[in-house]
Length: 475
Image (cartoon, rainbow, N blue to C red; front, side, top):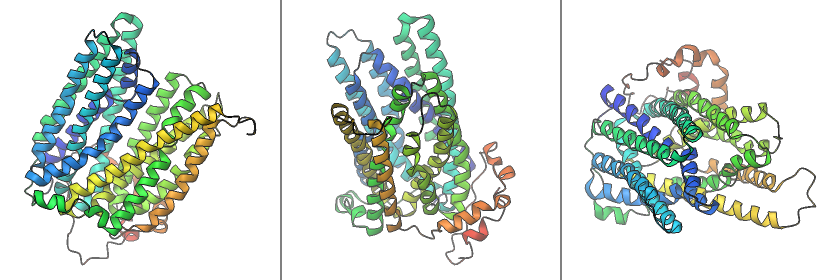
């Protein structure tokens, strides 16, 4: 197996930052604003939100293509380039003077869905390819640094292009479409620049399963008892999380009457907390592995929805606190979940396992807001006068999500990670603040382009015990 060189590391980080700008400019507030400008209703915007999760089904096709030819680098670059270039067609359709607004919306939704299908294929191929290059002992450090810089690039894009869009709509109200056009053209340029950096990364020789093996091994992740228990946890956890998460913004805007500006500031605070914590969790996960961190951080995520029920109109510090808390701990959950998938999946069938994980997570995330939205619709039409004063239907959704999160978290005990640590070991290590040396230990934030060391692959030394290794300075 070829190991990441310093050259590969730099190009992978540059790729991630450019890809993050593309993803930021074609989603979130920019995509929602674009949809509203085109006259899309709430149902169409809801479909837009579901598209990325529905497209995860195409990761199986990505795994099949890897098994068919094994050329992961070529598949990654080609799929990413097609997915990002399609936004020029999206922009062209938006500018067409079609007589039927419904037809225009259907065409746009179809093209965006197709773009995400190619993104799904590219992602599973990229993750399988990258996991071959990064030493297993450095996965946390690498992805922590990369994700942190990706978040930084995303924040910069939101600030710069958000200000540009505000300026355009304030001073040139008749040129709103032109403003969105420039944003999406910039997104495509950053996306294609990402592909250039991808092409510069080494392509290790691997021995992928044959095409005939793919069909025979299609259900292999489900037959793997440990991985199946992990998939079960993933489905129910996402079902619990996404039954509330999409409605937090609705709660802030409609029930708490927060301004769009304040909501944007909260999103930025959350992103800063995320990127700050990402490097920290990356360093810790390299020493303690992933399950203990994911388990402990998830206990915080369990109670976030019910804490939002305590926020009242005019409250300022509570939302800020919740965004800092959520951003910091969700960074650990996201990083360690991704690392865990790589650690408990066999290298030979890793693309298939990655696809199974993402599809399972996507199904849970797609079902949850639909069911919660249906429940809210029923509650809105029902007589809820029996509820205590101040209790809203959204509060019931938040309470239900908290209960579901608490229940699904119990499933985390059912699967195992090689050389996993316990929560007790994690707590003892985190108490040793001097051992973590956060003052000096975070210096890779300013100097991220350092070559990754290959860790000792000899399975003999079990002395790499988490409680001892974390007391050493991390450079």
